[in-house]
Length: 200
Image (tube, rainbow, N blue to C red; front, side, top):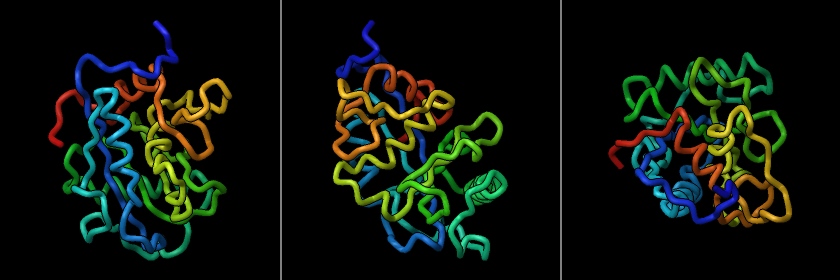
């Protein structure tokens, strides 16, 4: 078994379940093509992607309002956990696949990085939340969202893979990410937000 196999496909199709949430500080109205690019890459490995709401764009149903989110999210554990609690309460009776989904939160925040998956946002058995800034959607490969989902799936072993021998891998930090390794496919298949049966 080669953990670096780039062509590995799961025997049974699984679906990753995502909730797309927009905060007021995120002025774009869409994901910049990231969800579609994620679907294309995941499908090569027999993985589907279910996004709530359909399309993943900004709508009233997935726009979290509130005065605390009119400014960038603070870079501390309390702020991240409050954000996840608020998102959880917002989607509880709205999102298909709840509670077995990972929130992808489009917002501005005070931490460095174009997109982050702060482990301080982890609550209970769920994966950490993925936070995507507007600058995070500027990558040509459109892999920012899936890269952060990779951090959530690989938690707690969620380091970047910047080895030259796997240049172009999803978990590298630079643009040009085009493939997954077998170990990453397997991590997605056992993630908190993965299900064998789901409606796409």
